[in-house]
Image (cartoon, rainbow, N blue to C red; front, side, top):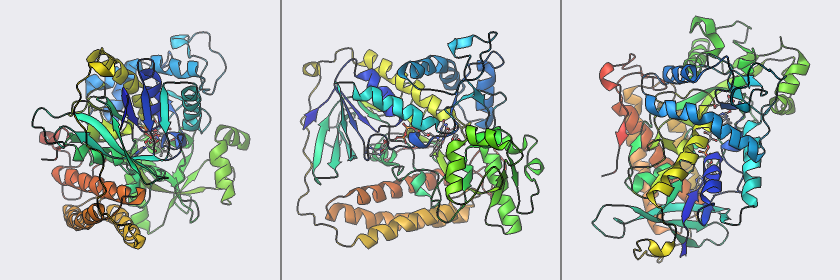
Length: 539
Ligand code: FAD
Ligand code: SIN
C-alpha cells in the first residue's frame, strides 16, 4: 500500500496540468494505463478555443457556447471557464507550447497573445481557436510531459490501470461516504496494488470506444466514469454523445479525424456527384454546430444510400492546404488521397462525451475526496452539445481550479495530519486465468455494434429499450467473468464499457425530447419541462 498526497488517474491535458500544479504542494502519483503520452489529448487537431483577439469578446464566446449547448449549459460555469481561459493559455505558452503565429497586429495587444493565428470551427461566431498546425494536442501533450519529467514529486505509473475506487462505504463504515484510495492493476506483473489518498482526481477522458466507429484511441473506454458510478458518485447528461461529422472513410484508416478546422478554412461538404447539401439544413452551412452537421450527413447518407459523403478543399491553394494541415494531408496521402486534388470521403463517428461525472467548476464530485476534470467530468459547460475546441479549454481551466480548491479544502499536506482508515488489500482468492479470450472480444464487439445501431445519431424508444435489455444480459455475463477470473486490462475495459453503455441508454430513455445531440424520432421537439440535466446515481 502506497500513500500519496494526490492520486491522479490519467495523463492527458487534464491530468498532467493538474499534476504539475499539485506537485508544488505534495507527492503526486499519476496512474496511466498506456504510455504517458497516450490519450485523447495527443490526437486533438483543431485547437483550443479562447478569446485573445480585440475583434472577439468573452460575451460572444459565452453566447456561442450557450447556443451550441441548446439550453442545457450552466451559464455561470461557462462564464468562469471562458474568462479564465487566457490566463491558462499564457501558462501553456510559458511551459513551451508553440501555437502557430501570425503577422503581428500592433492594435490587438489583448492578453499578450495577439500574435497568434486564430482559426474557426462550427458554431463559433469569430476566429478564436489557437492551434499548432493540425497537431495541437500533440504539441500540448509534448510540453506537459516534458515539464512533468523534470518534476521530482510526480511519480508516473505507466501501464497501470485503475480498477476501482476504495470508499468508506465499501469498507463497511456507515458514516458520510468518501474516497480513500484506488486499486490499480500493474499490467506487466498482473499484481493489483493499493494507492491510498484522500485526494483522488479522475482525469480518465471519454468513452468513444463504446461505439463501433469513433475518432477516439483505444484508451477511451470510460473507465473513470464507470468507477465513479460504482462508487456512488452522481453522473449527468450521458445521453449527449457528440458525433464528429468528418472521420476519414477508408477501409484501412481505422479512426482518423479530418479536423473541423478544414471546414473553418473553407472546405465544403458534397455528395458523390459534387453537390453541396449543408445549405439545405442550416444557414450556417458547413460551420453549423456539430449536432446539426452530423445529423445532416446521416440524413444524406440514408436518403441516397451512399456509404459516405465528401469534404472538398481542392479550391484552396495546394501550398496553403499542405502547410496548414500537414498531418491530415500526409495521412490521407498514405491512403492514396491527395487532398489538394481529391475530395476526402468522410462519415460521422463518435467523438466526445458531453456528460460525465457531475462536478462543480472546481472538479468536486458528489463523493467527498473524489474530483473529476477534463472529458470524464460534466461541469455544465457543454450542455446538450459541446462547442468545438471548448474541451481542451475546459480541461486546463478546471485542472487549475481543482488544485486551488484542494489547497483550500486541505490546507495541511502532511499525511500525519489526515484521518486514516484501515484499507483492505486486493484479494484475488482462487480466481482462475481466463482461457477463453474469445468471449471477451465477442462481448466487446457486440456492445460497440449495438450502441452504433441502436443508440446512434438518430434514436427511437424501441431501439433504446432493445439496447437496454441486451446490455442487462451482457452485464450479468461480464460480472460473472469479473468475479471468477483473474482481472486483465481487456476484462476491466469490457466491464467499464458495458456500464457506460448502460448509462448512456438509461439517460437517453429518460430524455423524452430531442435536444442538442440527443435526437429521437419519438419525441422530435425539445420540451421546456425537460430543460435540466439528466442525473443518475447508483443506489
Ligand atoms: P485524455 O486526454 O483522453 O486522457 C485520459 C487519460 O486517462 C489517458 O492518459 C488514459 O490512458 C488514462 N486512463 C483512462 N482510463 C484509465 C484507467 N482506468 N487507469 C489509468 N489511466 C487511465 N478537443 C478540443 O478542444 N480541440 C480539439 O482540437 C480536439 N480535437 C480532437 C481530436 C480527436 C481525434 C479526438 C479524439 C478528440 C479531440 N478533442 C478536441 C477532444 C479532446 O482531445 C479531449 O476531450 C481531451 O483531450 C480530453 O482530455 P483529458 O485529459 O480529459 O483526457
Ligand atoms: C477537430 O479538430 O475537428 C476537433 C475539435 C474538437 O473536437 O473540439
